[in-house]
Image 1 (tube, rainbow, N blue to C red):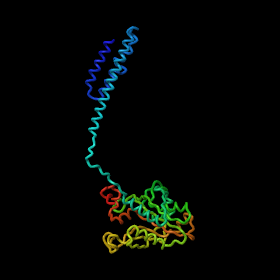
Image 2 (cartoon, helix red, strand yellow):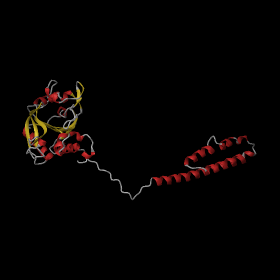
Image 3 (spheres, rainbow, N blue to C red):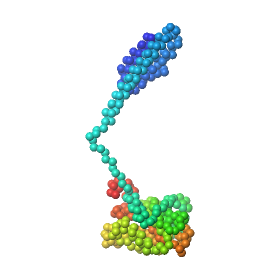
Image 4 (cartoon, one colour):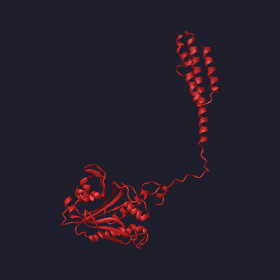
Length: 339
């Protein structure tokens, strides 16, 4: 058995010299020190030797086994060091190369406009309110004085989930929800996404952002509405902007008005951008209809109020001179980096 053990040792040393990569050492360990190796089998056969041979043979066998384990461990260290050196060489960083400059991001133009609108109305004492984008027909239409057979619904081609649930077509339902849970005075704006089945073109998309405003208190007049919206327009578009109010129609306000600002391109003289009128429409507004107050339990004899609504995309297009609404949604960095 001693000769057999010595033969195994010599064979191991020869194969150790032939190792060419780290995985060869693992194969060598399994072959000579694994559970099915010759050395392990000899250890199991020690019990078959005579009592005189067993101690000396067992000692020699364990000695050889320890030697093989040490040689294997030494080989592992050498090959790991060699592999690490090779890896460091391959992944070496040239410190003389210029560093990569991280590009700085920026807010989307719609986000910038919304933040500016918030800032302006917060300075006037308005607060931000939120409501669901998936809305009940009652809040989206009926509570706003637009019953099921009202022709005004035709202008808001809606995405219906079922007969009583739809994607909101404007942020006006937030007004109703706020008034239902809060007694006057109210000063709020609501900002969020709205949905209408509009064909996509240079001025329409099925998804858009709308800003709704509402103020309710005792003795609020149309003069208050004009003052607030004139202040907003001049803060948003410049102190030299002129503002005009034209008669309009909305089911939930009476009287109602369309609000225009003097053209930013021609300074009100008339050009192609404003249709040679000198004016650009920015929003709709009016005094809250008493029928809406009745729906939420407000005393229309005691309180009055005004409401207004505008599209964020429309405001951004006018502010930045953008002629196609689709640019906001195409994620073209060449366009977005301009803002």
